[in-house]
Image 1 (cartoon, rainbow over the protein chains, first blue to last red):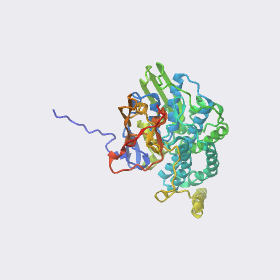
Image 2: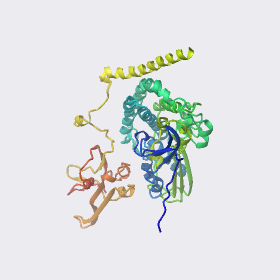
Image 3: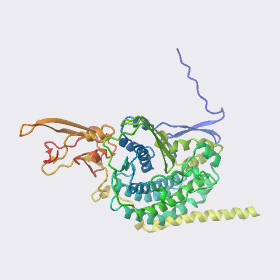
Image 4: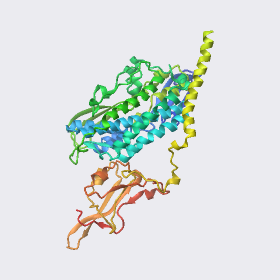
Length: 374
Length: 159
C-alpha cells in the first residue's frame, strides 16, 4: 500500500512561511517558530518545541527525592535556586518537618540574588537582540559578581544544587555576607548605567513602546505570570499571594504596570532588580544562628498523598506537584513551568506586527528554552 | 507648523539620549582601570578557584598511599545516573579474617552532573571535590577514571 502523504499547508496560499530557529541567535536556545508572513507582517506563529526535551518529569519517577534536585537545576538554569527550593518545599510539606529560620532566610537571599542575575542576563541579551552590543558586556560584568558569590558558597555557578530536602547542602561561606553587601553597594552604583544605555535610548524606545501590547484580560486568561504578567497589571506575585520561606517578614513592592507593552515588560524587570536588592538589604544583616540542615532519615519516603508548592521564579510561577505512593520514588511529578505558559501568548500579541518586532516581543517574554521543554 | 517643531524636538531629544549612552561607554573607554576582564590562558598559573568549587570527584590519599574508602557503596546508591561504580574484593587479613575492601572505585567524569550527593553522603569522608576545571581530553576513554591509586590501602582506624 502506498501511503499518500498530504502536504500540510499552514497558512493561506499568498502567505510566506519561514522558520525562525531552531538555531536562531535571538531565540536563545533551540526554539523553532514557524512564522507565516504577508509581506513583512506577521500573520501567524506556530512554536515547535521539544528540541531539548529530556523528560525530566519522567526521570523524576525513577530517582529518589534528594536526587530530583539536581534535575531541577537544568530546567530554568537561570532560576536554579528557586527551582531547587520549590521541590524542597513540597517534600518538606509532605514530611511535615519544621525548617529553622536560618535556612529560610538563606534560601530567600539566594533566590533574590538569582533573580537579580537572571534579570541582568535578560537585560544583557535583550540589549544585544535590539542591536546594542555594549549591553551584553556590561550586563555580564555585573552578573559575574553574583556568580562568584554562588560559586564561593555552593561550588557551582549556574548549576548550584544548593537546597536539598531538609535544608541546604552547605552552610554559607564566611565571606558570604560581606560579598553580598559589597555587591549591593556596587550594583546600586551602576544600575543607572542600564537606564542611560538602553532604557532611555531613542532607538530602543521607538522599537518597544506600544509594540506587542498584552491586555490585563488576556494576561489572566493566558495565565501569563512573572514580570511579563505584572507589566499588564496582573498581580500574580507568589511572594505576595502565598508567602513561602522568609517572604512574609520582608517588605517589598510588587512591580505593577498597566500598559502591558514590550517596553514595560522590560521596565518591570529593571524595577524588580531594585526590589530584590531591598529584600536582600532587610535580610542580609540578620541571618539567624542555627543549623543549616535538619537531620533526615537516610532514605526519604513521602507519605501517600499529593503535594503542591508554588514559587515565584525569575520568569513567573513555577508549580511543583508530587504524587507519592509511599515509596522512596515519587509516583508522578509535574512541573508547571512559567516559560511554557508564557510561550502560548506569543502568537496572540505579535500578530499584525512586523517581523523585526517579533524579535523584540519574543525577547521581552524572556524565554529559557530548557524550561519550556523540560 | 506645530508638527515641524515636534519633529525637530524629537530629533534633538533622540540625539541627546544617544549621547547619554555614549557618555557611559566613553567613561569606561578613558578609564581602563575599571575593566575587569581576566586574560584566561595567560593567567593560568595564578588562577585560583574557590575552595568549594566542584571540579571533579577525587579520593584524597595521604603520603603513605592510604585512602578512607571502605567500599560501602553508599556513593554508588546515591548517584542519580550511575556515574560511580564501586568494585570490591575480599582479602584475608593478617589475623586470618576475611574482609571486603575496594578493588576499583570507578568514576565516569563524562556522566557526572556535579550534584555533590556522593561527597555529601560518604560516611567516612573518603571523597572530595578538586578544583581542577580543565577537563578536555582527546580520547573519551580517558574520562573514565579509577579514583583509588594502584597499591593503595585503607587508612588505619577507618571502618
